[in-house]
Structure formats: structure tokens, C-alpha cells
Length: 471
View (cartoon, rainbow, N blue to C red):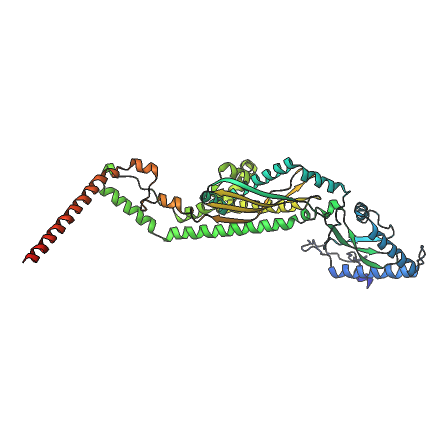
């Protein structure tokens, strides 16, 4: 059985005396692959041999009785319960793997990590005193709120739906209602399961705390998940835009409305005199309409070069990368690949900002709302931001959790009615230029003539009644 696990060397038998030898050149086509069954079998056999040998050979250290072990474990548990905040933090660092017993083998299992709530702050902790000084500094709080409001306004104007509401609303001023929320408990403690192999060969599963520097960066360690989500959204945007552009091209090819409009324009230009003939604008195709609907078309060329350095910027203009960039543009729709890259960059940045929010060990949350008051109503944005007193700056970008549009029903349609020519309500600037006001005396003369005719008819009717009465 053991011989089958070990590979034998390749040999060839050759006759010693008066024999014929035929040589043939052989080439190896298929490479040998390791057998999984052999590896598993060898691992199981080696484990059984080691465990048997550990029981047969005498141990160097004397084994303590079970009662002594139980008392020692009980004393450790009581000591952990009596430890205060900073001492407990130091104890968690000691349990993170630096002071493990030398005669034990600890194997961490990073496949599953659990989170435990941190202990509460105490009045003597330096972090709590920092929070007190921060709340008492009114000027610093004012500057932080102004910074959050400015960054939130920039983000809101970049979003498509909110930007359209800004154009309709025409905000004049802003109302800021933000509050600084101080945490009551310490940051959470992360624990990882360890497989501890004792000298006696016994394997035990134990949960041990990770150091703060490693536990606070767990969300950063999961950046491949953020990358996969951003890639999924970018690929989805690419296929969606490609389908819409392909559909628009097919409609342009099989729809003859564009040619008929061009013929009508040519016949009309022939009938009209030369001084009235104007070059008729070509109607936009369906493909151009679909490309103009994309949000990326609203960005300027300078912003596009910053967002897409390979497709638009100087990075792709290098001689070694220009051929590859041209191949990418020729194989796909340029609008589709531009929009997909922009969506990928957006989701990647959002994922990084969310991970950065949890990276700080002393975070202070800024929660509240910001209102943009305009002529037609208000736009309310619920905002969430994170401020680090240690770094003295905001962590990441403020997040807009929810948006509310509050229109003013009395003024929402008022500007639209003024601009309609059929409504009859004109602006003061238009009333000065209209010559129709000179015709008003003519209308008054017509009204006076109608009134005199009615009086004459009444007098004639009264005379006829008097004549009938005399008869």
C-alpha cells in the first residue's frame, strides 16, 4: 500500500550480451498531474502515525490533574470580568496571537469573523474628554456643518433626478439642521476562531480577539466584494446601453420617415421664393436621441478626461496603448463603454467611502437634514457623515440617505402660466412692446353705439304702447 503512494523512477531493461537494441525518440504530450486521492490518503496516514506515536512515547511534561485545570480556567474568567476598559483593551491585544503558549499550535480560521459590542466609555477615558471638547467648540462645529452642507450640495447637483428638481425649484437659500452624535461605547471588537492543538494531540476551537489595527480594516479587506459589485453594475450598464443603441440603429435603418421629411423639405424649398428659402435642419436620428439621453453626455470634456483617463485622457494617447484603445473603440460602441466605465467608477468610489466610514476607531456621526428653499417649494435631503476627532477631518463623502421634494401648490405652476401665450396673462416687459393696446378706444366706441341703439329701441316700444292705449 505504501509503495503505491510513492512514485517509482522510470527504468528500461537492456540485454547485456548479443542483443539488439532499438532506439526510438519519444515526446511527452501530457504532463503528469498530482493525484488528489494520494495526497488525502498520505495526510490521513501521517496524522494517524503521529497521534499513535504521541500516545506510545512518554511525555516530557507532567500532566496536571483535571481539577487544577478547571480552577485555573475559572480564575481566568473571573479576572476577565473584573478588568476595566483600558486594561481589557490591552488584554485583547495580548490574546491576538503574540503571547500564545509556546507548546500549543494555533491556526486561525479567517473564513468567519464575528463582531462583539465594545465596552462603554468611562469619564476618565481620553477619548471621552476629546468628545467633550469637541461639543464645546461651537466654531469648529459650525465649520464642520458648513463643510458637510457644501459637499452635500455638490453631490446632489451631480445626480440626475435631483439636478432636474434643482432646475425647477430654483433654490434661493439653504437651511441646515445637523447634529453631532457622540458614541457611548467603544468600537466593536472582532473575534476569529482558532484551532488550538495542545501537546497531548487534542484539538480545541477557541474564539480570540483581533488587534484594533486589524479589526478596523476588515471592511477594507472585503474590497474584492466591492470591486465585484462595481464590475457587475458597469457590465449591466454596458449591455443596457449597447442594446438601446442597437435597437435605435435598426429603427433608423427600417424606418423611412427621415427620407420622406427630407423630400418634403426639398419640394417646399422649390415652391417658395429664393429670399424665403432656408436650409432645413436635419432631424435627429434615434441613435443620436439615445446617446443624448445618457447622463455622461452632460459632463464636459475636461471632466471626461479625468473620469476616463484611458479612453479620453493622456494615458491612452501613449504609443504603446493607443492601438489597444482604438481596438476597444472599434469593437464596441463608444457611448456604451464610456457610460459603463463611469458607472463602474461611481460604484467603486461609493464602496470605498462606505469602507472608510468604518475604518476610524473614534467616529462621530453627523446626522440631520438640509433644505434647499426655492420659488416653487423645498428640497429636503437626509444626510449622514462621519467625523474623526483624531484626524480632525471628515471621513469620506457625506451620504444622502433620502431625498424629499416638497412642492408649493400655490406657486408650482405660476411661472408656467405666465409663459403660455394662450393664457392672456402677459409679463410687464411684454405689455410695453405690444401695439394691441392702441385698439382699446375702438372697442369703447362700439360699446357706446350699442348702448344708444338699445335706448332708441326702448323709446320706440314705449311710444307704440301709448298709441295702443289711446285707441
